[in-house]
Image (cartoon, rainbow, N blue to C red):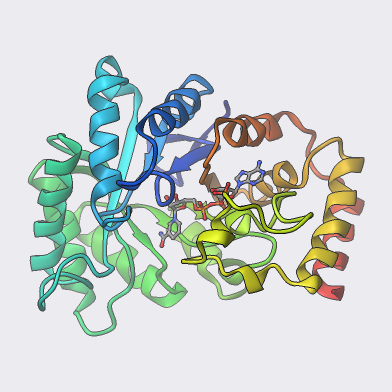
Length: 319
Ligand code: NDP
């Protein structure tokens, strides 16, 4: 594993981190959940990413990871970076979502109970709340650290301007913003185009980018139809109509470039997000142990040549 420094902090994160958004809910096989985390850790993935609402049902992924911590990682708490977040809908009524201090602290206490932990390593504001003063949200993150509930804080899905403002408020409070978690992959490049990566770099933060495989679209998963055990079949966050002929034409060209590099498309997709110095870690998901092994093996490939990058750009812009 390669460990990258997260911005201008003291914290090193693995170049590949594992997220528990999918495949860790109450209906998922406990043996598979445990196998995914154990194999990831054995391959040097020290960072596991959660949120209050991961499941289904919401909260169940944290409960599952709490069990894994107890049963599989008991001796390894100090080898692990565990993150959670609050921002999206978690419970009914006016205090169960967005960015108030009330919600963020109550949700963190619930997360800690589900995880069976006294503190998490990173606590995030999961989304920018346009109706709550940013000072209140950032003060809640600062309080999470000062009260011993979190070691570091971060923001996720924040636009560039709010990223600058959040970083300044946190710096003034004495709890620097460690990290930003935006979505970024070859098909979804907003952080590059809308100034988020520039803001992250300017503020001395790191970026951990989620869905580097575009939920599996940037792999061979859908090349021959939609498998019955795939995320597109579940249809909740990835719809089967996203597997379009246009997309498949594009991914076939990308796969050709990957093959010439000696990689699978999934491996090239992971390596591609990591080409930017601002990206500390690629935050993958997995339903099978082999998917994690494939992603980690991507790190052994050589850096991209200028002509490979140009060929990728041409494919992305021309189809
Ligand atoms: P990816 O883009 O890595 O998608 C993962 C999915 O791709 C897997 O579940 C699997 O789908 C498929 N896949 C993975 N590897 C392979 C492979 N080698 N070959 C073929 N298919 C493969 O990431 P996610 O969308 O899962 O997101 C990762 C994490 O990012 C989440 O768990 C969460 O922690 C975080 N996240 C954060 C958000 C935020 O708002 N901050 C929002 C979304 C995610 P299948 O299940 O079909 O096998």
